[in-house]
Amino acid sequence: MIRVVLPQHLRTLAHVSGEVLIEVNGPVTQRSVLDALENSYPMLRGTIRDHVTQERRPFLRFFACAEDWSHEPPDTPLPKEITSGAEPFLIIGAIAGG
Amino acid sequence: MSKVRVLVGTRKGAFILSSDGKREKWAVSGPHFAGWEIYHVKGSPADPNRLYASQSSGWFGQIIQRSDDGGKTWHQPGSPADKPPAQGGRPMGESNKFVYDASNETGKPLTTHQWYDGTQHPWEFKRVWHLEPSLTEPDTVYAGIEDAALFRSTDGGQTWHELPGLRGSDTGPRWQPGAGGMCLHTIILDPSNPKRMFIAISAAGAFRTDDGGKSWKPINRGLKSQFLPDPTAEVGHCVHHVAMHGARPNTLFMQKHWDVMRSDDAGDNWREVSGNLPTDFGFVIDVHAHEPETIYVVPIKSDSEHFPLEGKLRVYRSRTGGNEWEPLSKGLPQSDCYVNVLRDAMAVDSLDSCGVYFGTTGGQVYASADAGNNWAPIVRDLPAVLSVEVQTLP
Image (cartoon, rainbow over all chains, first blue to last red; front, side):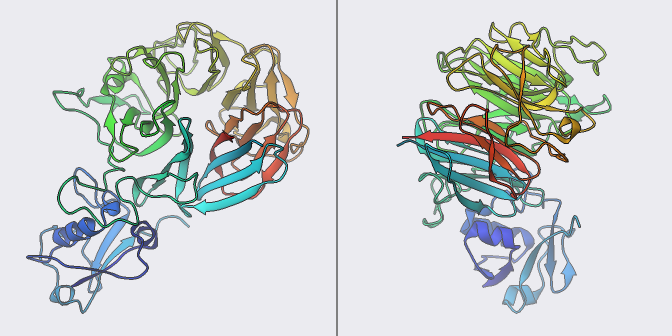
């Protein structure tokens, strides 16, 4: 299972309190993780990626194994620590404002 | 005994203020959707327990929330909290999907509109400013969005479709954003004619449809805006809000950027009724529930100083449909008050003694149970108030 950490506001929307566990069939990439996440929690559609372009919303960032993956191609395989569940995939709200 | 429910949208959540018909003691519920900007909350006239809310955030975009029990519980239409995700079949989670209709079959080309510097700029969805439920169908609701367009849902907010005739009219490239963005902020449904609807956009002006939203025409004749190269242009006016009394659907009242205006022919012609107002800049305007010639505004000093004159918060009332105005200040702060009252932040109830309500950017919501003669705060310390709506309940 893939572990995903959501920002607080999205946990509220998805009615979850902690990490989210999702199953991904096939290669584990940012796209497949987000597809599986939105399939399990459809109320999150449009809040992480644009509904139409499927691009990351500008004020969100993606981290894996302490690396910023926000600008990596969406189909690049994620590290094996994410695939194995040893590390979570992090969706983080950018720090903006005071 | 009748009850009143005041629906308040703020910069950091929604609040529901409830009272009996006396409107003396209030219960406060909230914050709902804490931490999110709630541009608007409004109830269905056809089913008072059906509420719609526009929830948005710079981080996470647009969310539509719906309550079927008068605001006790909420869910995103199509994604109820107590139901598992759809497996096949109809996709869920599209209640926040607002996509301009540019299809050949049903839409209009997605052209460009005028940017602040006069150049052309692509249309981009930002947020829902205003939700207007149908007068007769609880599942039908209209959404006014930024960048300006009108959307409609007929399934309780699960899916949304643009009425593209408005954005696609030939004036679209001349619309421009006001300081708050290019927002469609006012939607008025004509109770006597289901095919007629009025909308207003900053800074494009007012528009009317007489065929249920298929085609629209600008209704701005008589407006004058000195910031325009042609002050009497067909479009480009910064209309802040428009109000109508249901019994007089051909009479419209408008608070423009500057100027309070009136039309008695459904917007075909406007005339200024600012009269003796100390300043005719402002955002809100509303009409008494039982007196179609009694109207309310909150004068704001100027377009560069968005607060009341002399630090005195005063509502102005005209009982003559404009021109002759009286200040109403009893119970309102009369010194050191520098709040603003935003365009959707005033509403009236329909009890025998008409209640008037407004919210401020300082977080106060004021109520008058006697048509404006006396005021008292319901709450003083909410986040900045973006919108106020009222439901009068049996």
